[in-house]
Length: 153
Image 1 (spheres, rainbow, N blue to C red):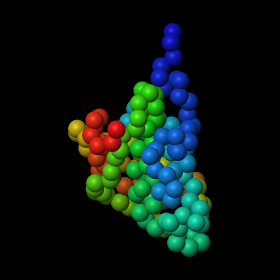
Image 2 (cartoon, rainbow, N blue to C red):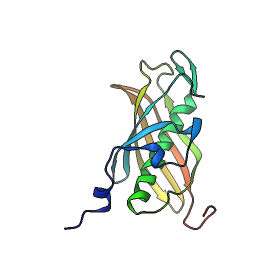
Image 3 (cartoon, helix red, strand yellow):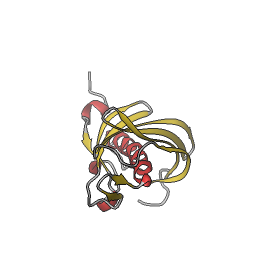
């Protein structure tokens, strides 16, 4: 029996291999799991990050972006499994955002996301960011994903 595409591409995998983001905007480290409409990634924020405010304070936008990047990495993983290029995507709305603490005890995060609705190029996803056993943030985000043949070649 031939291995499935996902059996050929083992997780975890570095985010840089799955995302178009580079430089200061590549915020997640690895995609750890991908199962159906769900994905899990890890992230570490360093003091030189553009989102790092002071010793224990992080801009809230960081948490929104790592949730979005986790789903983008999952989509990049799916594309890699199909031997195709990942599609470009953009955050187009934030329906809900809860920041439980702007001062987490750790700079290591686990991000869990799930697609809750998909219609054409639009997706709605929910995500949670945890550090250890402490929830840091949650969000419901709308994203637009480039269709095949749109824009870039």
